[in-house]
Image (cartoon, rainbow, N blue to C red; front, side, top):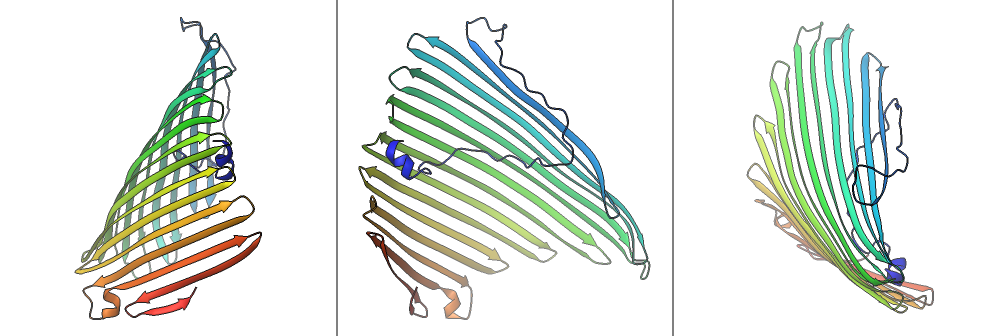
Length: 377
C-alpha cells in the first residue's frame, strides 16, 4: 500500500485460520509432486501442482502410562495460468487437511492406589483457499480470493481407582468437544502499480461443551459450554507514495454457562467492538481507534458486570513530531450488594505523550468515583 503500508504493516486485518500443532513423535515418508502440466485439462492452461503427505505414529511410556501419538498431514496446491497477450490470468487453489491423535492408558497397583485410566485427545483441521488474479503488463491487476477453515477437537478421560487402605472406590469421567469455523474474502483492484482499493472480510464462529463428574462415596460434577462469534473487515485506498487511507472494524461476542452440580449454576455474556481509521499524506500520518467492551455474569441470584470505552489517537510528522493520546472510561459493579462502593465503580483515565525533535514528554491521570479518587498515573 505504498508509503503508508511501510509505516503501518498491520493496516488491514489478516484473514487466517488456525492450524493444529503437529510436532509429534515420528514423521513418516513425505513426497512432493514436481511441477507438471495436467494433460486431462482440455484447455491450453499452464498447470503447476505440488503437494505433500506426511504421517507418523509412535509409542512411549511416561511412568506407568503407555502413550500413543500419531498424526497425518496432507497439503495440495494447484496453480493454473494463461497468457492473453499483455494480460495474464492466474488461479491459485490450496487445500490442507491434518489430524492428530493421542491416547493414554495405565494400570496402577500401589499400596495407596489400585486402578486403571484411559484418555484420548483428537484434533482435526481443514483449510481451503483460492485466489484469482488478472495482471496486465505495465499496468495493474485485479485480485479476488477467499479462505475457509474448519477445526474440530475432542478429549475424554475415564479413571477407576480404589484405595486398599480404606476400600473406597472412585470413578472419574470427563468429556469435552469443540468446533470452530471461519471464512474470509479478499478483493483488490489496482489500475496502476502502487495504486488501488483493497477490501478484506473475516467471519468466525465456534463453540465448546464439556462435562465432568466424580463418584467417591458422594457425587460432584460440572457442566460448561461457550458459544462465540466474530467478524472483521478492512477497507483501504492506496495512492502510492502520495497518500493512503483505510478503516477497519471488528465485532465479537460470546455466551457461556457453567454449572457446579448439584447446586450452583452460572452464566454470562460478553460483547466487544473495535474501529480504526488512519492514513498518510506525504510525511504526515494519523490513526484514530475506538473500542468498547461489555461483560455480564450471573451466579445464583447475584449479577456482576463491567464495561469500558477507549479512544486513542496518533498524529505524526516524519521524525519532527508525534503525539499520542488515549482516554478510557470504565464501570463495574455487583448487584445486589449491601456495600454501595461495590454496587458501582466508575473510573476515568487518560494519557498524553508528545515527542518533539526527539524529546519526549508524558502526562496522565486516573479519576475514580464512588468513592472519588484522583492520582497521577
